Image (spheres, one colour):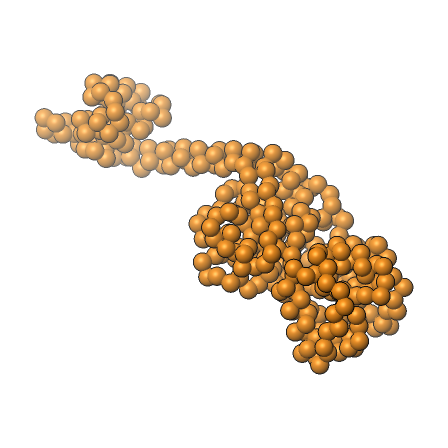
Length: 326
């Protein structure tokens, strides 16, 4: 039995005759009739009976074949779609927009497993100044994915939450650490801070958290990015609030990292248009979430055993972010 014969059989059923079915299939009527007869001979049953000069009706055997034939074609279509998706994953591309609060190096650290599994997928990652610009570019289609913190300033986009960004206080090497391991926010009244000039959302969040406990932020340096912030902190005399991932890196470079009480945090994730994502984009988001979920689970387990947030994050960081896992 050939797939072409199944397609011809269903065409005759749906168009109630050879003539209209042949026109639909762009084949001659004799060729269609011969294909149906060949199928009947192969199956050993009659599938149609002639009830009028130009009309055919299904026999009981033909009636039984209809749902089976449709299932065969549905399976073929599904297989073709799956193979098409596989081709897109093997050699597709994904355009990604990030912002200062969700920097490109952070995204790069979350997709190592995706890069290992799909090395030929091209990733185009760009940073924009803020969330409104980012979401505008996603809406117009310039970026398929936009990594951002909440809230998303438009209801026309879908948002996939990936986790919660936690900001820790990073202090110069040699700074005295509190005996309790945490520092109340209201104890930071005279602490000199450096900010990332482009991360306005993050700056507002830190300033609001401090003002909520009666502390006016003492800002003494504005830097173009987080790496410049960290360089300044490592040089001494100034402090910064940095996300957990970068706080781990800072501590490895000698900085003192402190968890504040309360902790400054905000949900983050990926914004995209409501229409379907490409297979490559869907898979990239899945890998990002899997990486972060694994890290968060390892942190939670270590904290249950008594580890601090920064100790737990540091211990699990390399196993989750650095290896090129399949």
